[in-house]
Image (cartoon, rainbow, N blue to C red; front, side, top):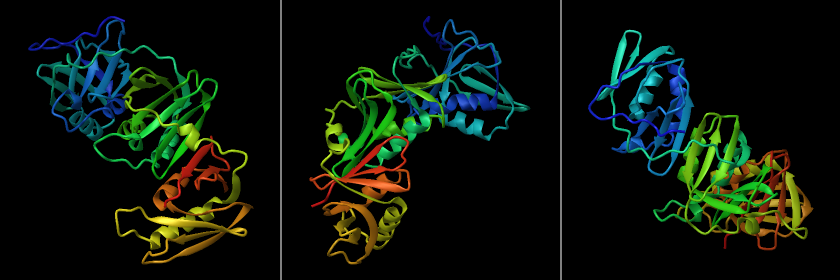
Length: 383
């Protein structure tokens, strides 16, 4: 593919793009997720590119300096001759407010002129020559359902607690590949973690970390239901779907051994089964009564007694509460757990029952009885 043409400064662009508002708005949606709207630089802009050799196609790109997203569109009537870029937020706000109808776009430096019916709008046009280089070549990777990927990222993100300026694994999710094993996504902090197993299998032994801010942008860019190809490169992870894609920078940290900590339980672990809705409702009632008055997380105590699970507030709390639910199976459990992490992770399990594995280290590994794929939600005991 030949290099992208760039407009020279100080000249009129010529040509008009006639396009339906809905097509343009849809084309801008994914790229706008990678834009830093508060920046006073090209990081707040969308680039409308005209790659050589791609007759009739417009490439819309957003780039905030680290993440990048793009979408190809094919206007039915396009005679634009040069590329241009303009601030994303004013353009998106305008398109959202416009009626669903055909619009005309042309560029007369220093403005992008948008016409809809008898209305005319002028937005500043900027020099897009400084946008980072872009390689639109399709990468080889692992195919995943977008709906499954969104659910997995939400489930694993519920375990993250880090928020400081110094990035550590508490703020990151990990994509883990092992050859001929399911692709996995993991998130963990000092309080616990979640591990999601996809139906797709890895093609290499590799693990990478993505920051939770990047995950949030990727979640916003992904459509509801399509096939996504995930490719893990040297310094980025590339996600492509249809005519769109997203490039995510990797976090340069040593990858924790998530599979050892969060993976499937061993055959010697004690196991119990309980009704999922009963357990979640009990935790919700406990958390509504017990509120931590310090920076420490609010905890609940879980204890197995005969054929029941006792869920109670921690001794010393100003308010006290206790719930008892029936269980099947047997095991030893008498520990405190972070209520927020436990409740948040359970939201992404599925099925009538929860199967709980009780390793000797005091953790709980929870699997929903009918999760699309296994979600191992582990919550560590608190001392």
